[in-house]
Amino acid sequence: PVVDFRLQKHLRNMPEPGTIPLLYPGHFSSSGTTIWPQPEMKKPNAIQRNSETEKWLYPSGFYCVVRRFSSKEERHRVVAGVVDPNLFNGVDVLAFENHLNLFHENKNGLPQALAHGLATFLNSTIVDENFRRFSGHTQVNATDLKQMKYPSRKNLIELGEWAIKQGELT
Image (cartoon, rainbow, N blue to C red; front, side, top):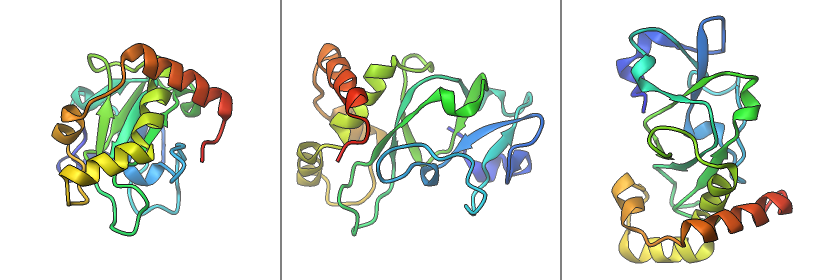
């Protein structure tokens, strides 16, 4: 992931020629949808694509992201969203800021249904209740996510197919 203060000179407030999308937690709504770019956001929306930034980029695709930090006032500690590559007008790579945990397959995107299934599962009340049992803090680390028990890949894909048909989930 991109650690923004280390790549400061490559960050851009808004997309311009030679840049690609840089996604922060603020680009994901509470319903898990991606809203990019966000001109009113205080964080940059893009990063230059060059030899210094290339190693931090991921091929465009569907990804499940989980915000690393939540506030105590939020309904859930684990807040997941789906990155839909169709929102980025044919961009072939994306950058993810360090405050997002990223689900991927060998640094590539996931099948669409799997990304939606993971996000639906992670946003469920049962996952939130279980997470709160073993973690009293508002930070969600990659290790926390790795140690969780997940449904089978087949079941996550079926859940994702169901979620896609539903549209917006409540």
